Amino acid sequence: MEKNYLIFFKICLLLLLTTSPAVAQVGIGTTTPKGALDIESTQYGVVYPSVALTATNAELPVLNPTTDPLEVGTTVYNTNTTSNGSFDVEPGIYSWNGSLWVRHYYKRQVEGFKQTAVLRSSSNGGWEVVTGFPITSPKTFFSKYTGQYKIELKLDYGGGAIIDNADVNVALFEGDFRFTFEGTPYLIRAKSYSTFNKYIGTAPGTQFSNISSQVFKTIYVNLVASTIYTFSLEFDQFADPDPALNIGFLNNGNNSGVIDGRGYVGKDIPCIIEFTYLKE
Image (cartoon, rainbow, N blue to C red; front, side, top):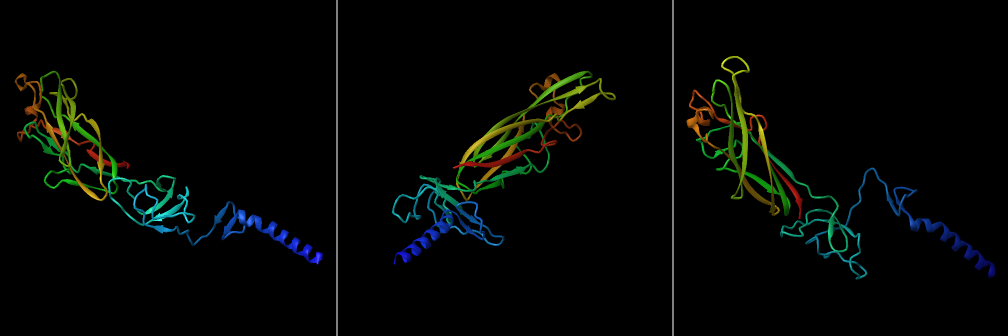
């Protein structure tokens, strides 16, 4: 009897010693796991439990089988999409951090819109549409997420030709860009110097117009997921502040058909409007 007990004890000890590493390290597709769980496959992936989360701050419908609070690190694949304005979810892998479901891959949306043709801006033209950003059929932006977005305006303006004063002449052209987003206007002032120099080039001299001047503006807005927003862009070039002096803008910054003193919007660098998602 003692001999049988001894044999039984030795067998149990052997099983314990040989199974302990297997309990500490589990390998699927490998006999040499390099961690607590090591899965290797050239064909198959890991399928997470699929659930329909309702918000990033709500544990349910996921439960801890021990009835304790949900364990930190619990990971699932969410199949649901919400657009409540806060704590929204969309399909993807989420892990519980103790108070929130944290998405494994950050949300990202960047979309840019570019001017499609040069605008020759007139001083008597009032608000003129920057080509590619119309008012009657405005451009649209579709927001994928609910949260804060950044709108970056990168605008370009150059002044027109100036009067030949038979010497050296300098004039400052000015105007306002008007970016309208969902009915709200934003004004951005632009300035550009033009010069005439009698002593450069052949007679009567050389005009230096369209000296590009870039202006920038950043606007922060809160948007709602799966919503279409409209926007437009215009430019209003100011007239010569004192045309009686006869040293300023050629044809007062306008085009008579023969004399063209208009400015330039987006000639060297097109105007660009870019939307970027930032955070919830």
